[in-house]
Image (cartoon, rainbow, N blue to C red; front, side, top):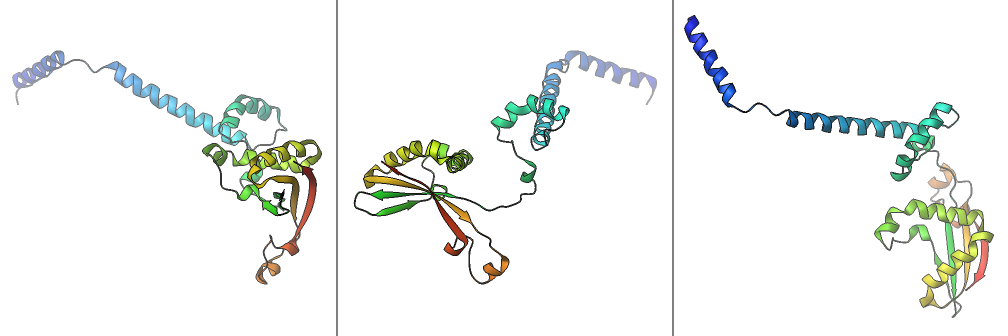
Amino acid sequence: MDISQVARSSRVSATQCADEPPATFAGGWRQRVTYLAMSLFVGWHTLAIIIAPTPTGSGIVQSLRSLVQPYIYFFRLDNQWSFFAPKVGRQGPFRYVVEASDGKRHVFVPSEEPPQSIAQYFMWREWKYYYDKLMDSPDARGYLVAGLFCKKHAALNPVSILLLRVQERDFSVEDYLQGYRPEDARFTNVVSLGNIDC
């Protein structure tokens, strides 16, 4: 290939480039901004899930936590260190007994009831905390909760609501191998939190 042919081919490519519209800067710019936004979100989320379970003894952690707290709360990322390696302790599930006007007693375990709505399904943790607080201070909250249960079970014609807390006792591997379960009567202690009239 001689010099004249190279010159002609370069003129043709230069002419073609002049006729074609230049590559838009906006298309590349949008991709860069999108990539930057996604990278910032991943970095922010990583910071939030690292800060959420850390102990709050440090000033740096406290300042970072105050910065990411709304995000942590909104997405329910607020967990303790036990979230990563949970230590399963004894449970104290809440139960209540509705005494009907005919004398029959109906036992209900809220944690085992199927959710009545999508909101109740997704808010299981809030309901658990709600019942935990009730068990911690039944004198302050018992009347309100009993009133709600009286309305909820109005078809049974309730006379009273008995609030109960079931506490687990020691349970060993040997007990399990003998066929017992932690929920069996011999391994639980039922504590009355109050009997409230409807």
